[in-house]
Amino acid sequence: MAPDIAIDADWNSLYIDGEWVDSAGDGEIAVTDPSTRETVARVPAGVEADVDAAYEAAATAQDEWERAPPSERERVAREFARVLGEYEDAIVDLLAHEAGGTRIMGETSVRLASDQAAEAATLPRRMKGEQAASNVPGKENFVRREPEGVVTVISPWNFPLNLSGRAVAPAIATGNAVVLKPASNTPVAGGLLMARLYEEAGLPEGLLNVVTGHGSEVGDRVVEHPESDVVTFTGSTPVGRGVAAAAGENLSVASMELGGNNGHVVTADADVEAAVDAAVFGSFVHQGQVCISINRHIVHEDVYDEYVERLTERAESLPVGSAHDPDTVVAPVIDESQRDEMLGYVEETVDAGATLETGGETIAMDGVDDSLLVAPTVLSGVENDMAAACNEHFGPIAPVIPFSDVDEAVAIHDDTQYGLSGSVHAGDVGTGLRIAERLDTGMVHVGDQPVNDEAHVPFSGTKASGVGSYNSTDIMDELTEKKWVSVQREPREYPF
Image (cartoon, rainbow, N blue to C red; front, side, top):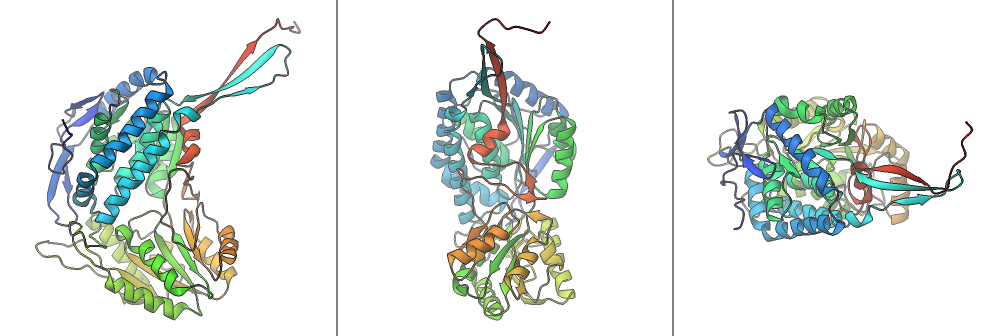
């Protein structure tokens, strides 16, 4: 029987030890559609007893899964990728209701999650050991790679499917079990949906456990649980610092992808039309609610006016509206707290002397009280210390900062606590590469924009943008540990 993964399915259960169970508590979390502001689902507000049950199930199941042949772990990953493709349309619709995702966002989410699962399927056969000579006569040294054990996954609301999947898929493929705590804004797409799809893919019981709930109720418990061997977290830097500190107290491995303040550098010799074309996508895809979106446009003064004019025209031409309209490019943001914060940054920036070229307000929607639809916004005359530039605004906002030479552009780009992603448009590829090499960021894209993710290429940041890395074999290093085993083949002489 095909799984029911529509938003109006019954999601009011936790997934623990291969069973859909009631929470030990009696609370609920209402899931709200950002486009309509209506409640579209209810999920359990889990409690500590649920967390404990999830880790007990995970630890028990992991012991046997670790010994499963690589072909079986590979099979599950490949089957999960197949299931994603089979139910793509339903998943895209669910993401529109829960995360406010446009069709572009939903299709991208499924594609990325499928790519991650396909890459994860290669990991079981790549968990190879080593052999090393010994300084002791007659001894052989072997180094084995083994799973860490139980992996805690704490995922965000902005791209809940693939940002859960990039940790869950490789964790299971490398022989671990998982306890997944999704964001309370998107508990279905980020968690319960994942369980239903893995159930369809034939994952053995207990290897994926999903506990929905408020961070204030269960967040600390999942991070500090004694059975938690690895904590993967995607979210803001302030929250991530607390998660990393708690994981450290527990001596768990911490893999953190945190905030960004990504720059889009455009030189005097750049193709302005191409730079703006990339910028429109990099700033406004999924309403700018992307950790690697363009937060600052850093543009040479010789092409600054043309760039601002073109960017403003393009921003004003973007189709805006409900995420359920297939033609919409910019849909409502996730909730009122995010909306109010980003519009506050715009107001502060204008008060500080910047010019509001377009946007800076909400757009009314028929039948919706208190609209979350923020107009695509362009700000000119921005300086790096203004609110919309120095903060991660996480919205459809494009502050444009002028510079006079490349040294100044690099200084502006790096004058932030973050270093996640970035992009460069220059007169030629060689010049772009030379600038890219100078930027203090974990990822940078020449002739493009910062929103890029490929499962076979490492994804990581510098400075306050996180620790550890996702994708490729880098995530395998986070999720496994090495064990030294030596064999004394001949009798050994000891000094006493």
